[in-house]
Image (cartoon, rainbow, N blue to C red):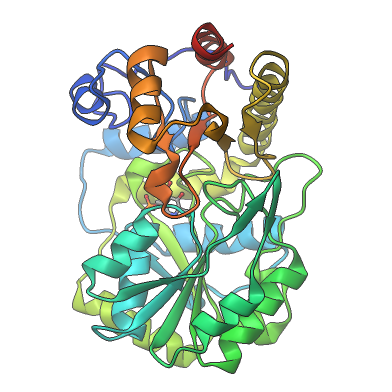
Length: 389
Ligand SMILES: Cc1ncc(COP(=O)(O)O)c(C=O)c1O
């Protein structure tokens, strides 16, 4: 059994999540318990550390070739997601957000519209806007604990001749939602009808809670998997976010060549040997660690869910089907965004991602990162109960 209960001091490191100056700047409380940014407080699988140590001890960190890591990734996709892909369909980028920037730069022009579904991981909006494209949103409908898509609105937005790209977050951050096969196909069919290029961010695709089913793009018929751009990464699954490596799967040659051209123009083809070693070890040896981490996170979720139901029953906890990010609705408090932020950071003492950061539909919610030792979860719950219970 791997040890997920161990509390590892990250305050003394360069961690963005735990750094006191950043907590002070962002939340005006350097002592707040950080459960925001999506990385884990768990030590990675020992095989990953060993592989990195080997490279570190070798002592030469020259230009490196990533094909070994790509081959390991291809095997992983086959084993985990039952999708047979070829190594040469995979293009690496430093991170998933970079991969989204590249998709926008490749498949849209200045002033074009990019379709997203809010509330959603806020860099989706950011990447569109920083590339001087326009966000067009088909916002998700959250009713009680059910998430639905307004397909009429989706079609309306997709049929706008200026809409050139749809970015889907699947599994969904921050809603912890898993789309059904029917919903995926319906959205994709609409995009095909109006020639809207589809990019699916599957960064959370390995973090599926017990009993749930994830439909990766690769689980759909070939017409979908061939023409959609799918982004996966080891960063969330194995806690390697700082190593910055993602895999963009593009089976369609024409799309791939176009995407590769932008990657080349940005000179992103050189890889970091430390990253390559860590990523390859994760995909070759990390499966058992990941399975245990998911079980541990699931128990954290059950703990939170049970304690909310018992002690703060008016807060609505969305079902966590995937990801380690729990979205909880505190709108019963009747506070505006600023008041809710202040309550959490100053009175309760928690540093969380505020729901309103994720765009329309997010106000009133707070997002909790559950990839942390149980004692932190208990501490967070105690702080919540003290003020809201
Ligand atoms: C949906 C989603 N995409 C992308 C990222 C970030 O990926 P990267 O660090 O590889 O850019 C995150 C991180 O939380 C995320 O939740």
